[in-house]
Image (cartoon, rainbow, N blue to C red):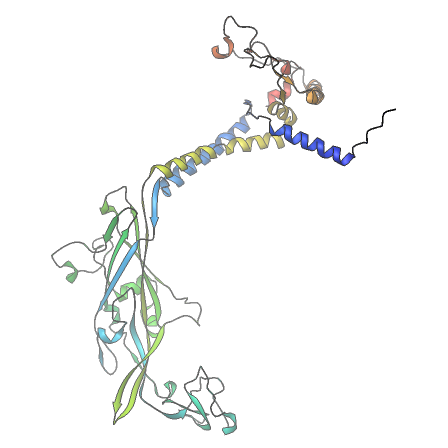
Length: 470
């Protein structure tokens, strides 16, 4: 008696079947099947989606974004500035060398409009400012000798002394005395400041396209000596009045001169190099850069000191300056026709049109009536007979449905037929005359595929109402 073979475990058998199915499916070939669905609503959705996609690519991608061009952003740029004008305060006259900081004429500079001066400061001991935390005191015990406050003005001596004015007392410090809050005097320089003129020289270069241009015309008549900027008539006269810049930024000059602020001059060079160089022009815009709605960071001020000697002792004048800081910012983009981005965007546009087919297929398979009938007509699984002779047949027989799917196919069509008979008697489906290419078959050959000979797959009775709705 032969020994019985051990049974394979159920889990191993299931894994084998799964692996065999995946391996067989890996070698399957899928080809699209074209089905014409006679449904007006679905056709309107399909064409509307195609039209929207086409308009998006034609209008936005190609016309607005100019995606057919090769582009370069961030040009190489240089900026030189020069300020001219004089003004006066309560005590003196101020010229450019005094109210412009720094004087080099770069892309960022400040114009002083108000100052708080603390004159005749010398090294010594004096009361600490009341603005410093824990500076007030009632006795010497409240002041620790040698303590240094990083936000204060000097090193504490340990004494509690009367303040500069009033009945308050603060800790004494060793510092430049008197401290800033004790003897500062305010002076306003903004009386004539709106008439200051600012010359902004700017030149840009796009290295990818070897294109360069500046914002000043190449003329020999000295036109810069008697012109000011105008967007229409004097675009290439980059001489701006300070009052004009503040007004274009939407600010009040008097308030800005007292508190200080940061104004940006933005120069934009957007150039379409498919056109002539004269079409590439700078566009100027102005806006305030410091956050006005945040008091802690709004405004602009800085300090500097001027040193001198009186009777052999070093003395200085401390100046806290409020002013308008000007930042010149240059950016831009240049574009020129290139074949590569044009082909890429055309291919993307043609591919995106297929979204309409995907959307309509999803609607048919999900929401419309007789979706099972459409699913059966759209997805076919065909088993081709094996070729025993080892070569491709000249006229293969019509493909047959796979045996595993025959019962399912018959059941689906039986359901569709019963539903059609319960609602409406079947009517003959109108046929159209086949085209010459579909009817004509090569002479002298055996049985071939013809439109007049329906395959065995379609020999099942048709669902007249279901196909009419499709």
